[in-house]
Image (cartoon, rainbow, N blue to C red; front, side, top):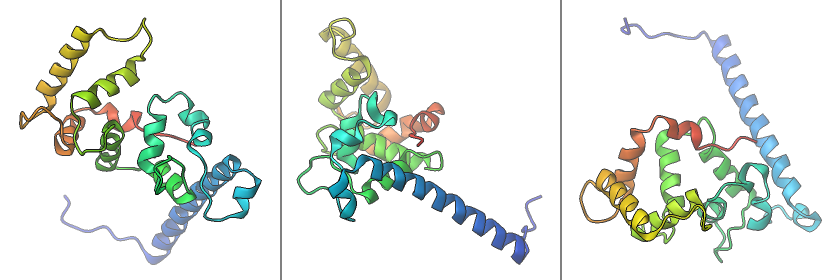
Length: 190
């Protein structure tokens, strides 16, 4: 078992390649159509135009996501850090959140989204913002200071392998690798 290589004949291989290419083009066409819907008239005539973060965040797939602004900032290549997206940025976002993205890619981008200060680690302040995004910041849902401190202590005890008081990317990926639901929950489908 496993000692012989399976071979597709040239015709079957060619048909497979055509099917894969067709699926990719169909997805890119759907993404392009969605991106153009977000553009105003002037932006449609400029092939390098950017769509403002406010319009991206109105997409039904992002509208109720508590991390929508961070998502735009992470995927934006804008020099002025305004969270606006080009079509290529938009494709990168969709690719990272697609079903076909690997655990490594999904966890890499999730880490960047949760790293609110962009310093390469999840520290106490990042984790506090993360929890507040998930629970909401209203009086009814917000954790009190003691609850927040205990929760972050528990997160660090579970995740901070090198005990430096922060969670780095490899520690985050280690934790995520033990969460089978992560890949299926980290997606956006257009």
